[in-house]
Image 1: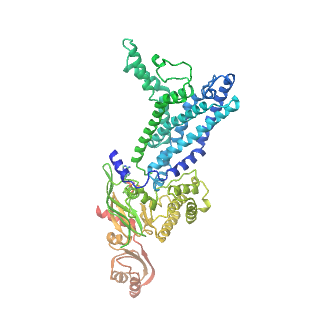
Image 2: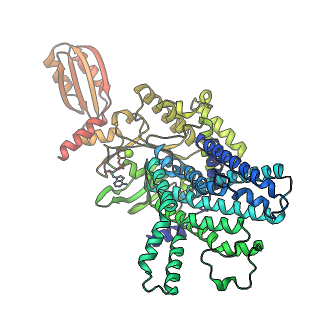
Image 3: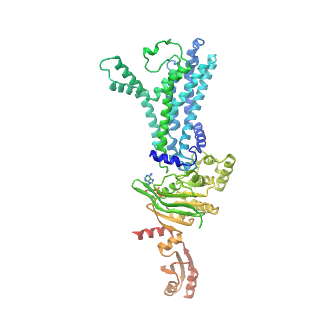
Length: 326
Length: 311
Ligand SMILES: Nc1ncnc2c1ncn2[C@@H]1O[C@H](COP(=O)(O)OP(=O)(O)OP(=O)(O)O)[C@@H](O)[C@H]1O
Ligand SMILES: [Mg+2]
């Protein structure tokens, strides 16, 4: 199969991206005018407004003392509301899934697929165009929210953000967009696998739920089974904890929360297990420079992106092999 | 010899054990209207998908307008219009918006795009409804919108899969008229249908499909001649002495068969158009000619007869 694909690829005329931007433009226009997206946008905006406003009420007292005041906008919680990042952790997957779950099966159900693919474009352009359109829409929505939060902070806190804060929150924005990308790629994959959009949406949400609610527990149990602590040696405890952590990191949610942690809390010096030896020479409580924090999250960020590419590639292969009769 | 627009050699498509298209040799000439006819599941759609490069053949070769759809799908699809079976549109968009999208996929420049879209809408009589959501369109309007969209790329060849399916008789007749006009513009048309009688008028040549094979090919007349033995059926109504009239008609050259279906109605099967001779014969035998009709050979009949003979 792979060989045959390669042969076709070599012999194919023209660029696989012919027509890509036409697809992106149409799909983005669809997303931005759809009722589905309107509802989700309003939902996110309200959440952002509510949580950030609550944060501001608490932060007012510390203006002038906290060097990372603007980052606190995202992370400060005020009972009963969790912090904004907490909400993003599940709103972003929701939006991403909403952008992708009927991408391909929708074309089949409307019987537009054969008409579109009878135009001088490759399937690549349709699939990648749909992904990009979802990705750009996600980026647009999240950037708007980011601006809203920063603007709100500027107005109410009365101090401008420092360059470091802007940069850190921008990186946080980028990471959030890529976190959405992985769920978008998953929804797109399911939209190829399942003919019914409802099945694709449910399957996507099931995966999300699995990682959000169950994977942490399962990782713990697996670690206990695979690396049991028999004699109580520190090495055993360490091995178990390390395996547990590695397994946990298979979840995009875990990767994303580590990224948020390192970016929005500059004092975090390491992710995961911290051995005393790693703390030698470090002054606890001093913030890390942005460069160091970025180095810290680099594996997590590239992991998210790699998983996105993997899911997309899987969808691509399946889509290339699909019979397109309506 | 006229230029070949479509040429396939030994074209075959297998789905597992099932052979959907079996060793098809199809040749369609420029400017022709060719009908792929056959019952459900006989391989018409599969053939069309292979012609467009939307499905890969298992074996055999295809040339469409001189291009190989497997290797050069973009060249083929830029020149060939395709109207799929039960054509679908983005129901939330207007007719015009749907067409803009297709125009952009074809890489048309802005000014050219506006010009061609208006022209095509006009040609299909859709200008008045161009800004209505396609969701509100009737089946017939969708079908015409499908043709309008196909015209955007100014195709040399248009392939239509079951274009008259689901249309009422009036709309179907109008649609066949559209095909006539396309042919008049010099566009080659390949259409498929399982309603043989509906398309036989519009097709220059037809190929009859059966279980993945093209079992018969030619003009409707040729097929009638081959299968029914005689291509012309003449209905003649005349008063007068029956035995004398019967003998006179039977003795006409080229007449193969004679039936009397009513006291004064005679049905002739002949190898040529013998209407003039028949009229003279009736008068000479002392009869009074009341009516004279020629019946086109019927594809349904050809098909039925062919398969009853094949067993
Ligand atoms: N993806 C597929 N997998 C397996 N078999 C298939 C597939 N697509 C088509 N077939 C089979 O191939 C045969 C030919 O199908 P095709 O759609 O070409 O027929 P058709 O002449 O267009 O029929 P219809 O008049 O119903 O449209 C059928 O028996 C069909 O069941
Ligand atoms: Mg068919």
